Amino acid sequence: MATWEEFAAAEPDMAKVLRHLLGWIPIAYLATVRKDGSPRVHPFVPIFAEDRMYIAIPEWSPKRFDLRNHGRFAMHALPGKRDDEFYMTGRATLIEDTDTWKLVSDTAKHDVPKTDDIFELHAEYVMTAHWENQGQPDTYPVRQEWRATLATAVNGARAAKVKAAAKPKTRAVAGSRVTRRGS
Amino acid sequence: MSNCVTWGEFASAEPDITRRGEELLRVGVAYIATTARDGSPRVSPFTPLICDDRMIALLGKHTAKYPCLLRDPRFAIHAVLGDSDEEFMLLGEALPSDDWSTRIRAAIEARKIDMTSHNDVAFEFRFSFAHWAVWHGLGTGNIHRESRTWRNQKEAA
Image (cartoon, rainbow over all chains, first blue to last red; front, side, top):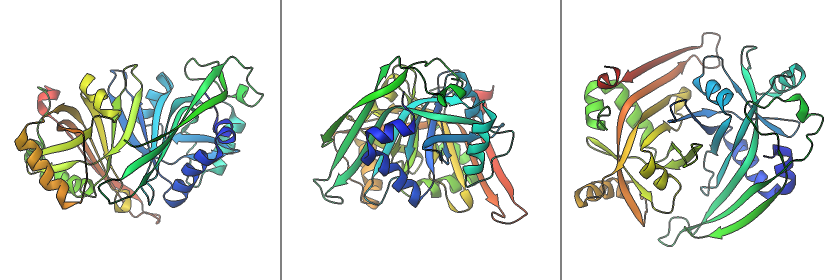
């Protein structure tokens, strides 16, 4: 897994796609999985604080339990003007450090009640896409995909403040990207 | 699919929610969550097509959601937020329904919104749960939420 900062450093152009889409409409959709294995999906507002990506979840929200349970998520931003897409999967880690919680809460552009859980979103896989020849019969997507590669690197001091809701102790130190054209 | 009902049956049971939901879904894009082989979640945009009493979607065979739904038909759908953060969410199951009459009905609706599709399979969506909500007084001191939830009675039984 990679923090947003690590992913953005590795793939700045792909990272810009999300920041651009959120600059237009600051909402994305988050999928989680319930205990019975069925999926759930809700809109959410990503929060960027010190180049890391977070989500604040109200205490009554069922997705809070999904993320506390196993942390797995998938997110998709709203499509852009050229149907630009940003998709990411990974794991969410619960923020238990009060300084980080306050930093995120203060950075958010919406109210974050003290009872909210805050999770950091770590990237495992990212896909961006845009469509060529839009509106034409021969329209096709150009996709870029990035996957974190896992290594047992020592977590940084800041990462150590974050307790994983689930397992991952490993951390991405590099990734691989491919570009695909066509469906 | 014994605990799920068609869009038409859902509409008969909850006409108000259905009417609001249909308006949000008709913008041409909604988000669908499925589960991958390893049990992790997936989410992607798709185009639901309301064909009278059925909800159909033409899902590309090359998309991630196609094998996900073939393996596990359970889905969650969330419409794009409307004015006043109006939201509409559905749970249920989707199965291939790729007969010629279904495809024609889907194609008629797809044509209305200039949707193009190829190498796809028609899936019919059926429902066990729906939730609709809207916020009143956004940006004022008197903010409050109006919401309604529907569960298929067969599921609750």
